[in-house]
Image (cartoon, rainbow, N blue to C red; front, side, top):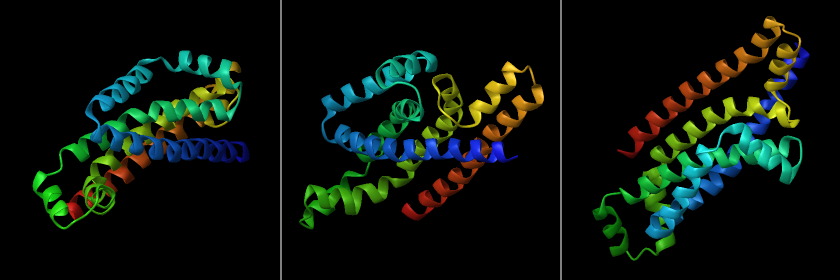
Length: 199
């Protein structure tokens, strides 16, 4: 039980830290993409290419550069999480009603003021939706970290495979599924409330 609790905590910590970085970078790139269309196309294309790289291949490439351990897994999770966050941020900002933006301009707001006081608050539900998708995916992908010396629930699953112990495999796999389902449910509820408050 102690091993399971420790592995679960480590799993959640790796994902949480990665998601914080991915959210900051992804929202920033999404804002930039909404401002500069051509650059936005390049950013989205790169993020899509990263998303299509198989997990094992990406982990192998990152391992060569950064070595074994949690740092490499964290970088991989950040890279995989960027696409839904960037895309949702860009779409949310570009699809805001022009009348609202014009009204903000008419009030004398600067570009940064419009962004922080008008655009981001209205775009939050869709941005949050992208973060939700990225988080649920990251919880699953983080299991692969055991192959590059990272911790988490993947370690328990891998040990179970080595020992051909189905009970041990399930002890590691079931919490991953339960945690992912819980976060998906909880964040969907939050997303719905955010949408209600902004409409």
